[in-house]
Every structure is written in C-alpha cells, then in structure tokens.
Length: 120
Length: 120
Image (tube, rainbow over all chains, first blue to last red; front, side, top):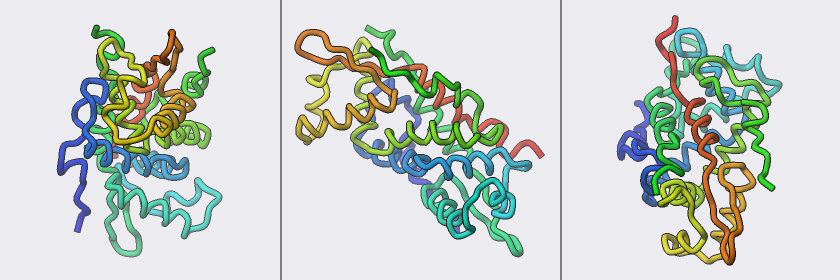
C-alpha cells in the first residue's frame, strides 16, 4: 500500500514561498521533507535512485557508493520512504526504490525565488 | 561583511540530483541548507522575508506572525543567516533581512526531477 503523500494531499507547496507567506500547516509539511533531505547520506541515496537507469534502484545498486553497513543504509532509505520522497516495491529478493518525481517537482517549485527583491 | 556562500563557492547544486549522482561534498553542502529549512518556523521566516514588500523585512515585521519570544525568533534568523539563505544588514535600530535569491534558485534547480523514470 503506497504511503499517502502529505504534500499531495494538501497541495502545500505549489506556490513559491517567495510569492506569499507559507501557512503554518504548509511549513510543517515542507519542513518534514527538508528534514529528510538534511542528511548527506540520504541526499546521495535520493540522487543515486533518481539518476539510476530506468529511474529505479535496489539496495544492491546503492551500497557500493558508501562505506556504511547495510542496516545504516536501510535506515536512511526508511526515512526517505516515510517522508514520501521515495517508494519501495518488493520484487523477488529485492526492494526497488523510485523517487516521487511530483514531490521533487513541487519542492523545486516552492523554492523558485520569484519576484524577490523586485516588487516594491 | 557578507558571509561567503558555500553553495556559490563550489557551484554544488547546479545539476539536478536526478541527472547525475551528487558527490559526497555536494551532498554535505546541500544537506546543510536543507537542514536550515527543516524547521517550520525557519521556513515561515524565510517565506515572510522573501515575500515581503521590497524583498526585505526587519524583525519588527516578523514577530507578529509567531507566538514566540524575540530571542527564539532571533535564534532562527541566526541559523538562516549562517546557512547562507538570508543576509542581514543593520540600518539604524533594526537589522533588515533579505533572502539570497540565487541560493533559492540553485536549490530549486537541483530538485528539478529531470528525466527520472524516463531514461532507460
């Protein structure tokens, strides 16, 4: 059962934060996604998955990039999954991970600087 | 003296993380910016500053939005300044804050989902 994306549920991040002030609820949702990306290992995992051929990767594709134990990698993947940034699907022996491109797209949109410093 | 932006110094974030894997150094730099944005109060402060008329705001413009003490607001503004997301300039009684639109633009660019899931 795919985890529901809070960011999709409320459309919290479609307006750039430089255009109008975030509401308290929007800020809570977005801060949880940024918190998931506030660790360099998780950012590299996210990037490895997103840039992997076919747009998906199993943990067998990811571990060689790190001098970390399997359980540590798994912990970080779990945090990314729970945040809604990636999904995991078990096929045979492995779980295959994909990013949610719509979540990345919305985070990208919310950070567009917009008219900052231009409007009087 | 403006704080040097680590993200400008290395151009760490101009290529979308979905296009090619982030290096370890890039991931460390980006994770520090996302960490600064991993708190809902800081995100709202960032948004209030970025969306304020003229693109800048003093602490006198920011405190009414929160049920928080002045020192708590000041702490969060300090974290945002130290991350390089905003600058502060003292003029008379107040410090006026602006976002670094180029930092937001680069974070936005790094999160563009790109060809995720399309390339084979």
